[in-house]
Structures are given as C-alpha cells and as structure tokens.
Length: 469
Ligand code: UD1
Ligand code: CA
Image (cartoon, rainbow, N blue to C red; front, side):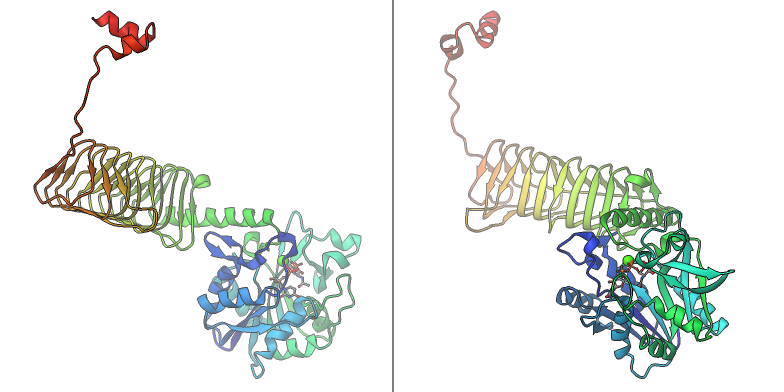
C-alpha cells in the first residue's frame, strides 16, 4: 500500500500477565504475540514498520531484529501511555506525510485484509483518523466509544469512565489509521491528566473531532480480530480461537481432523492433502506432513518432516525426519536427529536419538537407539540397547544393511556390525562384526537340578515343580 507507515505498540509492561516473560513474547499457535502482529504489519507493503519498545527492551529488540530485520525500533521514554509510544515512533517517521496505521502488540488476530479495508475506508472518507470498534457483551477494561446521537465524539478509558459511560458496549479496538501530520500536531496537545497519569493515544480522537476534523469509527462484527490479550485467561481464549481458525482452514484444504477441540496446529505447520489427524494431535514449529499420512491419536510432533503415507501413533517426536511409508509407535519417543527411511519402522516403546535408520529397516520393540546408523532392510531384535555413552563421551554404533540382530542385545559403542551380519539373542556386542558373520558371546548355561524344591520348600513354585514330576 502506498504512502503507508505502520506503528506497532509494544512498550507496555504487561503487568496483568504476572510473568518474567514480556507479555508480547508469550506465544499462541507457536508464534509470539508480537510475531503475529509484525507478520501482519510487514505484509502490508508499507513504507516503514516501526516497533515501539521500552519494557525489557533488550529482549524484545533481539527478537524483533532476529525475525523481522526490516522493522525499525523506537524507544519510548519514561512518560507512560499509548500516545507517548506513538510519539516515539513518529520520531522514526520524521518526513513521512502519508497515513500511519497503529497496531497493538497484544492484539494478534487482526489480519491484513481488515487493516487494508480500514485504510481504504479512511482514504475514501477523507478522514484524519479512522478507528476500529466492536460491540462486546462484556466491555470491561476496554476504552468506550462515546457517541452523541450516533455521532462519534471521543473515547473514554475504563478507569476514567462515568457509570453511564461504563454501560457503553461499543469498545475501542486499539487499531487506527491517522493522517501523519494531524497525528503529530494533535499528540503535542495531549496531556496526562487522567486516572492513570498516562498520555493516551485515544485522546487524539476527541481533540481532532473538536477541531472539526473528520474522524470515524469503523465497527466490525468479528470481535476476535480485535481481541486484546492482557492476562493469561485471554491468552488461552484467543489461542483457542486462533486454533479453531487454523483447524477449519486445514479442513477446507482437504485434511481430516476428527476432533478439532483436541487438535492443535501451529501457524508454521504445513499439511498435505488427505492427511488425517486423530484426537490429541499437536503439531508444532516447522512440522510438515505429506499426503495421506495418519497422525495420532495423542501425538506431539515438533519440527518433524513427515513424508507421504506415514502412520504415526501415540508418539512424541522432535526435530526428525520420517520418510514415506514408514510407521512409528505406539508409544515411541523420537528425539532430535532421528531419520527413519522409507517404509521403515520404529515400533512400540522405542526411543531414538541421532539415529539414521535406513530404508525398510525396523526397530520394532522396546529398544533404545542412540547415536547410531542402521542400514537398509536391517532388523533390530526386541529389547535392544545401543549403549552410546561411556560416562564421559558419546560413541556411534553402525549396523550395516540387511543385518539381523537378536533380541536383548547391547551394542557397546563404538562398534560396527557389517552388512548381512547376524547377532545372537542376548549378546553384548563389544567388537566389530564382519559382514555375513554370526556374533554370539556364549556364557555356558548351568541348570542346578532340584534347586527350587530344596531351597524353597512348600512354595507355589516348588509344589508346581513337584506336581509335574
Ligand atoms: C488500549 C486503549 C483502549 C482500547 C484497548 C484495546 C489507550 C489509552 N487505551 O487499552 O482504549 O480499548 O487498548 O485493546 O490507548 N503500550 C506502549 N506504551 C505504553 C503503554 C502501552 O507501547 O506506555 C502498548 C502496550 O505494549 C500494548 C498496547 O500499547 O501493546 C496497548 O496497551 P495496554 O496497556 O494493553 O492498553 P489497554 O489498557 O488495553
Ligand atoms: Ca491491551
């Protein structure tokens, strides 16, 4: 949009969150509140986007500069209030004479389309200021839109409102478009003589109207778009609503989601056609799921790349790759650096970490596979431990392709098992096994005849042993 600047207010303390983390760094759907707002702000193709910071400035600044490097940063001084915050931003927009959109860092769901149409309305009406309002059943805490016979006359904050003003249900969303010059001139005249001793941005509205300028409130019906987050109750409510919208969008795009209320999908996730998500599935970060895969129930995937036709059941997985046709779970714990090749299997009660498991290779039952590679088509016996840690350092185990390892093995790394080699059940493999060899470490078995009958006389076992004689 031409001749447009965007200001994002994020200097407030967010005391109502009662948190060591600045309010706007709390996350919903995998993205910080201010991340949602800056993503929208930077999609408006504005001349400049300015974020106003003060509280925990360093933490916020490093977040903003890391993820939104084109966003300019202004610092608010010790004078409090949203009006003062905007003044700080205007210092970064010294010669700018277009329209200034003001957004709040704590209003995450407002979208590009709504802001675009707000700017359009503002320009069509030739306004000096246009703000967004909405009607709420419970308007407590918000600034109220004061009208006289339908005509906007100003905004009054909760703490400054009279009893009759507090009954007003039309509230200020905290989203505005201003003519830059009118905003500059008017803010100079805004004082701090109010219940909170703050320089309110909302006062600009009344002052402009009194001076005879055109100002209007654009009422929107989708109240979620302008929902502000001040405490953790609102944080969870807005997150649930955002999640409903994300789930609906994926359903419309061809994903089966059996129980939307228990399915959580971050904004950063991407899903293929005919994916099925079963109840209790949570998909986070840069997780991607290929066509036709079935995930869940009760599965959490964080930064996991999943191919097509994969089945993942009751699993927790992080920073891993599962290739097409593979199956995982139930009850698998897939830690970072796991790669499961096409048509491979990680079965029940298996934990993996930094493990490259080849095409069609299987670790079906009750095993720990850490710092290992397993070649194509190999099968790992039930209850196998890859002993990767000597107490000081981690070491690798390399299993070749088409190997068959016995149940209850311990691979004491560093160790290699060659292509096509076998290991016997119950073996502890400390030395490399050549391709095609069978490794076993026989410890001769001794049976002490009659031991139970002599040493546990009268026990159920002894009686059972005697009966069979
Ligand atoms: C503000 C509005 C209120 C509106 C509501 C909508 C004012 C005076 N009030 O109230 O009319 O209904 O938003 O959500 O504007 N901030 C700064 N510097 C400050 C104070 C706040 O940058 O000194 C930032 C905050 O970080 C936040 C935003 O401005 O992102 C809004 O501040 P907040 O304290 O949450 O204002 P509300 O009380 O919600
Ligand atoms: Ca707020």
